Length: 265
Image (tube, rainbow, N blue to C red):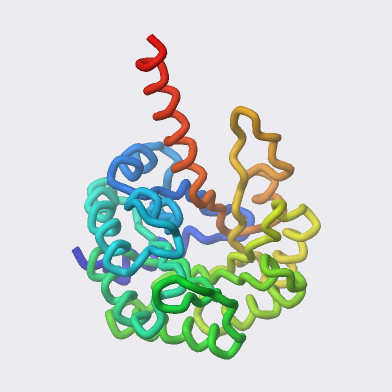
């Protein structure tokens, strides 16, 4: 069922600096039902990495038809639970960006995550787009949503320069340009070897007026406690928290442990 702008407005209103939207990213109908039924779950969000693994592919191999198949499975669950749905659309699939936005809207989504790392067709190579190209792609996505009747469509624009060895200041500067181009929030991916520090998150909040998405490391067996909790991130003043593929990995470990009991018996 096609999403409406009223639904998009409701979803956008959940992005409040200091009272962040918490997103436990899902990948299929089962994970959507489990997460969506939790009392504090206000919205559902896919994680492309998890969607790819569930489909027997890698994140780099995930194509648009496979993405849309996953959205087709998840969207009815979101609708039945009355929860808005946002889709991790990766880089938007090159020239397919506008049609991809229209497709997820037609399936019921009211938002996307859009990366500024662009993949070559076939997933053989990828590089962070120059700023002008990245800004233009956000404008293209926002225009496609407006033309589909959703001027309040939510774009969470991912800035990857910090992850790729650039400075945090550059990532924040790009983030400001992304907000001006029509993004609702900016997700600055931190260095690959570690989570962002409190000081770095505070700098993001200052530079982007709190319109920030931060990835939260979930606790678990054998994992150190994260430096920043969801409560800490709220106090710093961000607007959105996500967890990426961590629920997929936790589910896989639970499946392995349960099956192990059978084979060890």
